[in-house]
Image (cartoon, rainbow, N blue to C red; front, side, top):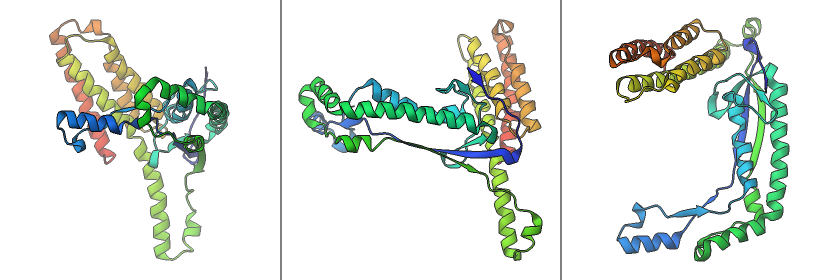
Length: 299
């Protein structure tokens, strides 16, 4: 497993947009829906129609995994097909992901590897589509008559996997802005400030995640019958994620990560109810600080 590590200059941040689409695999059974409602006297609007899979196929399952796995590779530190692991990133607007310019070669190699594997899978699916559908319908017996089967082109046309990389809008030199009208200059400055603020706001994501982990830890410390080490270890994982995602090196995030690490103790150090409640108080204090920090982000 190869790990890509980076230092960050703010002007080296880009945005990766991954566009994906997959064919719908569930198919409603309208006749079964009608029979259920008639038998039970239920209004059809109050009950969803039963559903079944259009087809079951290892190649389709893998194709879905190839498509779905790109964003976790970019954002969540998941190992890619190429064996590369990026540092954890943050979501940008509209489902896009902030990335580091120095990671572009690794990201492009991963995308190309996924595209190549996907092309092979889709070729196999297309070639065997008719037989796959026939085999699936045979297992459904009389229910097969209720299934609306798409054409091979309709089905294959729903697979979409694309990626575009775009830079953040560059700051414009004040000497250039000064040549614009006062109104235009104000708009330019506001636009630049908005881009910078959106990137800073993205750093609130690991804070929100750690608050959820702290809340779950408090619940287990105070209400759980058994304290699991994994629950405390998740605080250390949250701290590690926060450090990886703190691309701007914000001191408040670094300090919060240190406090999380201090809470991730061995459960043997909490042998009884009193000890757990005492630790829960410490966790609650850090949770309050994290909530204040999140509030400072305007969230």
